[in-house]
Length: 99
View 1 (cartoon, rainbow, N blue to C red):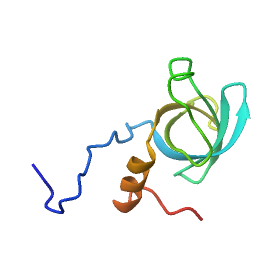
View 2: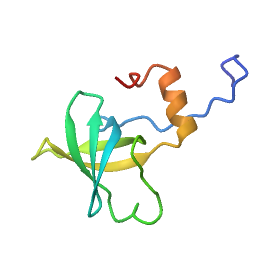
View 3: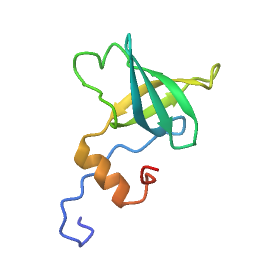
């Protein structure tokens, strides 16, 4: 089923209940990055072992993070969007434009 606009819309992975959109703002090294989350908070996010060397994360990438229950200023990255997917999320209004 198509939404009628003719642009090849992909079904993108959307955040689960405990996940939020985030933008990578700084690479910290040691499998850690600083992210600005959609809820307005900056967090230190960890790149899990299953993503290391398989999914390359760079500054300005849009990712899904799962904030830690016990330490809200930290999170785990659970997904990285391709550039085209991030553009689609912005067009559909899921992401605010960069300040």
